[in-house]
Each structure stands twice: as C-alpha cells, then as structure tokens.
Length: 593
Picture 1 (cartoon, rainbow, N blue to C red):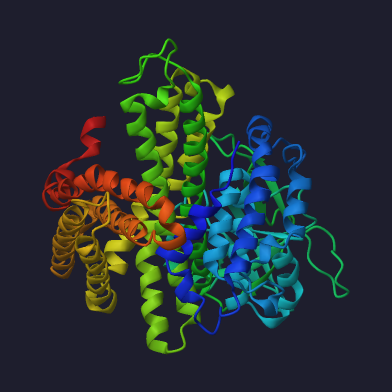
Picture 2 (cartoon, rainbow, N blue to C red):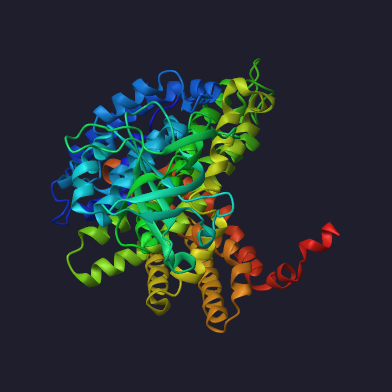
C-alpha cells in the first residue's frame, strides 16, 4: 500500500523550493500554512485510501474495447466521480473559470500523490488540467463560456491530439486537415494515435484538442492550427447534441499503465468532425505548447510519484523479508534483508533519487508560479526563463529516476520482484513510458541546449549557477553534522557544469550543432544531478527548528548523493566534450548491410 509522505512534501515545498516566498506575494498571500496542510493531508488520504487500492485492479483489468466503446477498470468511474467532486481538478485553475486559483506548487504536490496512487488514473485528469490552461489563455470567450466550467469541475475531460502514424516528435509531418465552414466552424479529418483517454466511460463528454492543417496553410509547423472537437457538441440550450464525427478505432496493448486507455482516434469518416478554432489560424502550435509545457512538468511528477510508491514498497519488503545475517547480528534468527549493506545501498539510492525528483519538480512549479505572481515585467520574464530551464530537467531527470528507482525496487524484492503478484514489476512497467511521451527525454535535452541555454544571451543559466554556488558556500560555512565534505563535491560538480555549459555555448555559437546534439543528453543529466545535489544539501541546511528531528536523515541523503551520483558529473562532462566524434562517425546503416 501507499502512505503519502506529507511531512517531506510540505518541507520540500516551503523550506527548499520557495512556497514560503510565494506566500508573501499579493497573488498568494491568502494561501496560509493551515490551508496548505489541510490540502496536502486530504490529498494524501484520498491517494492512499481511494486511488492506491485500485492500482493493481486496473493493471490486471485493462481497458477493454468493444464496438467502439472503451470500458474502464472496475471502480474507476466511481473513483473519478469522487475525485472530481472533491474539487481536485480545479486546484490551480483560475477562479474566473470556476477553479480555486491555488499555486501550481500545490497542484504539483497533489499530482505526485495521485501518481503514487495510480499513474494510470492520474494521467487522464492531468491532460484535462493542461486543456484548461490552453483554453484559458487562447480560446474565444464563447468557447470558454461553453466548455471551461465543466472541464475545470472535472465533469468533462480533455485530450491532446498531436501524434499521427507518420508524425511523432516531428509535427512538420502532420496530415490531419481542417476545412472552413460558412458558419465559422471547421470540418476536421484525419487519424491520431496514442491518444490518452481518447475514449472512455468516466464522463459524459470528452473535449479533444486537435492539431490540423488548413488547405492554404504554410508548410511546416507555421501552418498548424488548433481546434476544439468535442465528442458531443454543446447545443444552444447547454445540452449535448448528437455525437460528433469522431470515433475510437482501437486501444493499444501496452507495457504498462494498463488502466489508461491509449486510443487511435478517427476524425471525419462521415463528412467531417465539427471543430472550433482555438486562437488564430496557423498559430496552433503556440496554443498547444501551453498545454504541452504543463504536461511535461506533470510527466516529470509521474516519475516522482512512481518512484515514491516503489521506494515505499521496497522498504516495507526489505524490513519484513528475513535472509541470512547482517553484519554484527548474532541472534538465533535470520536478519531482515534491510540489515545487509547492499540492500542499504539500494534503498539509499532509491530515496535520494526520489527526493531529487521531488525538488526538481517542485522548483519548476515554483518558477511557474512566480512568473504569474511577480508584479514587474522584468521579474515575470526572469521566472519564465527559470521555468524554461527547469522544465526539461524536471521532466527528463525525474522520469529517468522513476525507472531507475522502480528497477532497484525489483532488485530488492529479488525473484519475488520479477513475479507479478508482488506488484513491484508494475511500477517499472508503468514508469517506463514517462521518459517517452510528451517529448522524449532526448527531445528535452535538445530543448535545453538549443533553446534554454541561449536565453538572455546565456546570462540566465550563468546567474542560476551562481545561485547554486551560493548555496554550496552556505554548506561549506555551516557546521552541520553529517555534511562534512559535501560542499567540496557540490563545488566540484558546479565547476564541471560550468565548464560543460561554456563548451556548449561556444560550440553552438560556432555552428557545431551536431556536436552539441551529440552531447545534449549527458549535459542534461549533468545539469540535473548538480541542481539536485545542491537542493538536497539546502534541505539539510534548512532542517532547523521544528524540522530539526529530520536533519540527520536529510544530511545523510545529501552526503550519499554527493558521494555516489555527483561523482558521475566529471565523466558526463568528458562524454559531452570527447564522444561526439565517435557518435557522429557511427553509421547505423552499415550494420544492416
């Protein structure tokens, strides 16, 4: 089972990632500590008592498809109804749209708990939240009036329709088409694949956000428009009309997240699905990226949520399972395997990776909140750039760690981890998709080196590294027990990151783009490990007062992470600088001949 780590979540929010600073802004001054505690406590209770027990049920049942209809797992509809009635879908949506207007940080913390309960359940509402944000920022007043309230409440759900058989990550290849109608609507034709919750029985209506091209659109991504295509169009009196010309042609049989229907959607078999333009014609990609950036952080949170669930299960198993005798144990009975050094090593690795995923995701959410709450244009721009830097880190590092932690969980279970009955294998199967969808982790690395590093002429990343160094200096000047030697390792990692960043900037400015791309993935990991190590140490430093009881454990995590994963940073820098030649010389086609 799963018990939400409320204390650790609340501490990370307020003492490490900036919620306490956010509460001082005019926008969020009414977000009291008592309110935060109440929300986290109830979210944790719901995740542990209502969602988590159905995770295994959904994995075994899947989403049967028959006659165009998708059946969700037993209990799924009732669970979703209770979740929506709790107001969770509109936690961070604007009050004007019927939401609660709370920080993205709080919504991110809740999303962590939903995903620990069941990643397959949480991904559906996550896309609805992204759809709400896209409509709030880009839709016409008429569309907002018609659709937002029911999406914010969770009465209806939303989907994101980008991918086509020939167009995965490269949206230039999209072939879905739209034709103008005389009444201002559009007819949509085409096929979309891998559509999460594209068809289901949990809500009366499903609102599809669909990318398509107009006949006279420019080539490439500059010619893509975004359309709202409901399963059932809304009539003038607010009732649902006849079904739109959109249908599910099948569901995928997947490695994991079996409770989440992944659909192939067909638009326009019978004359064209009726759609409404969101934003402007040929400007759909900008609208969709509003939704996609939201989703990328949310997918990072999926990695975090599964990691926490896998860690808790592995810890419980290690404490219960008896095998051999641990060092120094002399009693007549076997020791729990948690007494053995190798199991301790793996449990520490799981916990430190999970906490790094948490600080990266929460720090990204904080930057998003600050970009909205800041009063000056300069501050808004600053925090928007910080969110831009942290989004690929939160998405890629957290999802990589989700798979790594889940894999270690299987190892701790031994042979029983490879047996499906324990549930340990499900965590790895579920986690694996998170590094792939919403932009593969390789695409996150490309985004980081080609789009985020050059922001403000490189000054933003340089400034961020100075901020991180100041934290390392605080660690160095502190006398905190358990942090001996950590500051030196943090500073070495920061120096290494600075050198790698300079190399990236120079190579990019000199037009050596292939070399930059060859080193992008190790650079992202180097960046993420370094930020994570610094923020772990910050957590140890801030474990004072009422938090002092946890200081030894947080210092131990920071030290272990510095002694193990931060040692990768030098090798990663060397990989970035030296391996591009062999990578670029490699010809995969030669192996097939």
